[in-house]
Each structure stands twice: as C-alpha cells, then as structure tokens.
Image (cartoon, rainbow, N blue to C red):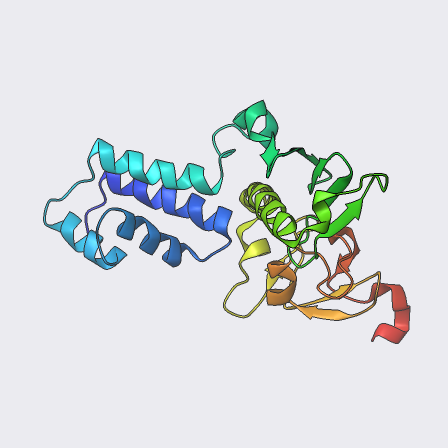
Amino acid sequence: MSNSDQLKELKTAARNIAHAKRIKHVGALEVVAQALGYPHWNALANAEKKGWRPSPEDIAVVEALVLAENPLISIGTDPWSVLGADRFEGELQGHSYRVSTQADDIRMWGPGWELTLPEAPLAPPRFRVTDRRLKANPIDDTDFRNVALNIASGWRKLVHARIASDWPRRSTVPDSAGRAEHPLGHGVSDIWFCLHCDRPSTGVEIAANLFHCPHCLASPLDIHASRWWLGAAAN
C-alpha cells in the first residue's frame, strides 16, 4: 500500500479525533473516510492505491472534524481565550447566563441559579437556587434545565477532549486485555482500587470515567493499582 503525504495527514487527523472522542483509532479512520464520501477506510485506502489523493478541500473537511472535537488541539490553552467571550456568555429563554471552568468542572449560572457539571463523566449535574427572593426562578422550569444542561454538556465535551488529548492513549482507551494506564503515575493494570471508598473497578470502567472512581467519583489521585493502604492485609 502506498502512503502519500496526504494519506498520512488523514491518519494523523484520525488519531487526533480518536484521542478527543476516546475511541479506537480504527473507529476514527471510519469517521474520516465517511466524511470524504467513502463507506469505510478500506474503500478510501483502495481508492488511494488506484491513484486517488485527497484534495485541499478534503483536507480542510477533515481538519474541521478535528477542530469540532477538540478546538484546543492547535493551541493548547483554555476554551475561553480560544473561542471568545461571545461563546461563554449568552441568553437562554430570555435569561442571561455565563459559563466558566473551575478545576475542569463546568459552572453555568445566571441571576438566581447555578448549574455545575463535574469533570467526571459519570457525575450527575448539580442544580442550585442562589437567590430565593426571585418569584419566578428559571431553574425551576424543566425545559430551561434541560436546555441549560445541553449547553453545559457541550462545554464539558471540550474539557474531556482536551484531557483525553493530553493523556496517554491507554488512559482513555484500554488495551485488548482491559488494561488502562494511570494518567498521573503511569502504572498499568486491568483492576484499579479507590483509596476513598476502597472499591475495585475494571480498567474499562475507570478509563470511561476519566480515572475518577465510578462508585464515589473520587479523583484520579485516589485511584491505585493495589490496596497498598491495607498493608499486609491486602495480600
């Protein structure tokens, strides 16, 4: 199989998409191929063997896919400075709001209400009334909550994409044996234990929750490959 510079660009783009979406590289190759009008990567590769080369327009399409998944990939900074002020403040159903991050948690708020989406993918949203003097607080409306949650979830997707792109590949996509790599200590295991709640999780479970405990949502700092805190009793 020939390996043109353009095809290398497509493979690199697929790798970046795979990191950001936390999927296997082969799945990202399919995404790229379908964006260019091919049913799967094998069809694209066969066309390349016969002389097809992606045009500058094709490369632009794929680059747009990468940026859609991780707008920070070419800059490596926070979304607020990249996307501009108009992207983190706005109006929802006649009510103003702002969005910010704190330790990778997403906070969205407006007069009298607040929504927090923790960094851990499995963590539930937290809605809070901040001013009970309001006679009609928008956060009491189910439709408002759902739309606000959708907006905040979009921002959390950006945070997750940035984290996944920075971490080792095996920290978000375990290998065929289910082993995941700790993003901080870089140990590798198919079973992980939480110092906070002492419960075990598989490599697949822990990676899916960005190395937060699936049970108590403790941070990656509390996740270990052994129950070392039990001493000899752990053996």
